[in-house]
Length: 383
Ligand code: NAD
Image: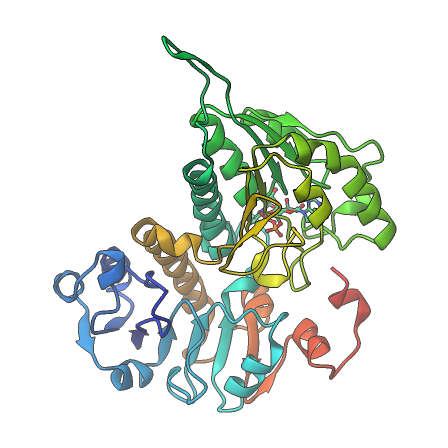
């Protein structure tokens, strides 16, 4: 079987889905064709791919492969894979169900990387976790670079500098990495999450916990993801967080609810309560944001506070991000190929069933069908 590695269509995307080391790992199972120049911005030239055993091809040659991988979805003109092949990318189908519905019509099996189940077995295939690790690290660096103060305490002949105060809201993979990075840079850090299990993890990476007086187990669903909050819970949460936001020099927000708009945790009024020159980095800006004034990929100055909403943080560390993405893809493909019968994915396999959004010309994932308005399965769509 031939595996095609796409060149990412967006100028701003510097990552590549498979690096040369990934080609070497897959060589026994698959022939690989890589679109010319696909890895350049991540630091991997065509020669490196050739040395690893791949062929270099045109976008059309990649699109004729049995399996095509990319980070972003293929173009709507169908440069995915063969009509009966497999396409693997971050399709974001709960947020944007119509793209997979259109692309799936050709008959390809479309596997969405955002739907890797949250299980121990699938952890090594989970690109969301890998990319969140990088985004959290980069968010802390961005906050440190933009703050007109230093992170660590310093005692110098010119006086003592007090350490920066960093508040991180949402302590999942990205939040914990942001906390750990800010701590390594010497800041004093607080963390907050609605999942009770997160408190211990916040402490374990060296931060203090903003305690929630009425925290409840219902904040977490069976899959370990946060549930959507009611309006009332949201208002109580903002009241709890207000004084902590006002005290922070850098605020980093990472709170997400899969497939839904991000919860509003910080209003414009709360941002206005921060000291002038403070910095906000909102990692949830792509889906509405956790911070009212933030805008995706824009820099907004709100009452003297710099509010950033970057959506390209993993791409800024394109080399390591691509290596991690590629390792996840190698593990995923190995699993899918071991369980499939030739081109026919094993629909009873737990990981395949969760990720396979379209197959045989139709959308087959219940939550995506619900997002399309085709079915109304509340239990599936509720988490
Ligand atoms: P995520 O990206 O879905 O959300 C980020 C964080 O925001 C989460 O911790 C969530 O609880 C929090 N959040 C959501 N709404 C909030 C609100 N209103 N207020 C405050 N916080 C809110 O989550 P994630 O980073 O992917 O992971 C969350 C947890 O799941 C982590 O403990 C992680 O280790 C675990 N996880 C496990 C696996 C696995 O077992 N394979 C894979 C990924 C993550």
